[in-house]
Image (cartoon, rainbow over all chains, first blue to last red):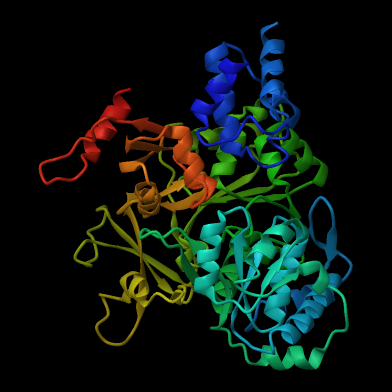
Length: 74
Length: 504
């Protein structure tokens, strides 16, 4: 999880990932952030995030993104 | 026709009970819109002592109330200044002080922010202005003082010296543009629009006034949908949207999600793009899924009132081909001048210059910048006639279509936003621990790159910059250097840094 957090911080500098469980709903993340995060995760974890996985619930927190990756790897 | 409110009055007469605008919470019919705007105007004039032709600041949210407030301000004989409530407070305060607004209007969700702005100007919740008696006499008297050359809105954009500049647009400017566009792009009362552009961005002027003029219906789409294309396409199908007038960046983003490999928007008839260079690769993805839709590429800076050229896509383009910005809109002349302000030879690159009634008055409280950009037509030594120098470089191809090349200066388009890198660098260099910093745009990946020297991490830099700049202006990738490279005349060697970056 820490590894993922570092990856996120590196790709979206300045975004406060740690203190919110509603990154999407509180408009902390914007569309470019999502695009950046999706391509960073796909490169780093070697998973395929399809358009069906692109829903708010999968990106509202670091742990939700972690769960998504775990699911896709499994 | 002298005032855009005539569009509202005509549509309220023809389609009183039809939905004009709707967001996910509420909708408003044409008749209601007319009555609400008159109620707001009555209340507003009461609060501001019946003054006219003054800027009224509005914290613009992506909702119906914001539009009702726009028309309320116009009914009162004043003009609206839509401001992004998400911009940093320091920037917002600087704009409001420069504006000298008699009142700030806001939506419920900006209550807290509005309270913090109270010391600059009185505030009023739009909802609270929606009730009470309408005083038609007071409104008519106020409106009778508004000429068609008086302002309808003012939009702030990034300024290279660190202060945003306000562009003043008149009723005549907007009428001239909307009359042309509604005919050229064949808008009717049967159109259903899906609005993407925020209301503090002049791209939205097309959605707002095409809807109003034609008696169409415009759905204000939730911003979040643009992060999740599958949900967006589902929503557009549910709403049976026929027309999308979007920022090109949103169009690209949706295509890149590959949603169109599986889905399409079944009721869609036309897509009209503007804001930055349209890419053929993404256009092809849309066209493959929706071949019968008519696609149009528009170009123009806010200073010429939304757009000044158009191109209906009328042939296939290879993925790597450049899509032209086309030819001049009706009643606008678009031409190219060289550095000495002489017309260029056919096929040569020059600065895009524009002439016509659609030109803005200029910049608010900044005659120096106004005089630099709005100049006497150098081809006409006989009588006063202004042209606007866009700072954009283009050439005309063999078919006579304009093809956009690049900017003359440090202005960029990033995620659909117009940004002066000078303003970003100004803010970067003002941070305490930064010794020096430069920025540039990686166009291919649409990312702002920053090289800096100083004792701060990239994360810290962006967290501090957020106090001064909107999020879309922050660098996306930052590189820390121990020593900045300098060239022979003591300037930071930008060319070398760019080469280093692209070599990575």
